[in-house]
Image 1 (tube, rainbow, N blue to C red):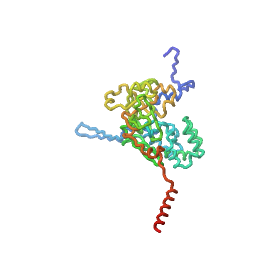
Image 2: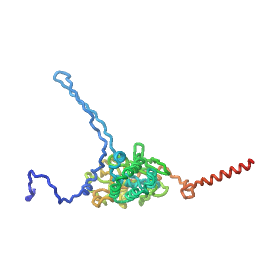
Image 3: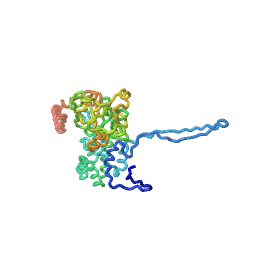
Image 4: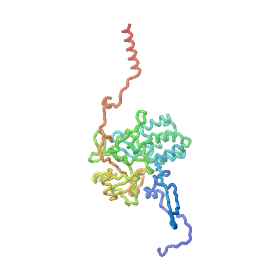
Length: 400
């Protein structure tokens, strides 16, 4: 203690109104320790204990204790969101639309990126689905305000809309549930990786080969993160000097996933924005990634990494290993201080080449047959009827 320090004995706690430490700084420092309320990892739980006492011989007493354990299943973010929006849509938190639960996959290159869930609602095929759900909702007053809030870069816009349209919350909840329902089975599962494919008023699913897109291992639902994946009509490119990453065209290249991570401060200390990770483990599924090469990383603002083989992972153990988790918001949403503490963008590259994420070359016959327009011409029904009548008249003349 210093000479001028005061020693207060029996004094009560007091409020220091001059404190400058904010909640924003608190979240910045401990973002790696936060997760969604209502979710829970799987755990083993003691389920009943029995105890028996037995006298086997004079002065010999035997005690027997027996217990049963059962595994409590995990409550994922996706399960919690679905329950909330199904049972109590009026009390649901619209902030989930700002979170980067969405995964947009390019129909052309096979590249993918994490996007806000509200971005998925604005996709053209999803807009058509919502129009079938509630016809002409987008032209109503509240519908136009809803779309404006979805298109806003501000996270507060959706809350302002939610508070201004209390009476329409059931209708808004119906639209959100429609999107959650069609995307519910997407993401990494026991059979592979599935994404929604909406085309020509059909609701389809596409099963992507994980061997050609190992980054899909990260997109498994958990108590930390959710995945709502859709194949969208967009050409996503991530160009590298060696021209190995997937770009527009029919060549064989590596697909990538763009996401954002928060480094756990307890295991690696401060990570500066100009430092580059050597090895990375992303929780809770614990996939490990390694830096692709120094040259590629030096030219990139993102960490450019690829999955690490199981053999190398066993040999290296925790050498130069940084532990992190996916973030609900990108690094650009944080301040420079957050960037310095390890909240940074990451590009995860597949370890094998593919054709837009697929194992075989695509067929462009439809485009060529349609004269380069990409659409097949369908004859006018009235012309078909006239041709049929003309043929009947000819047959009548021949008969006479």
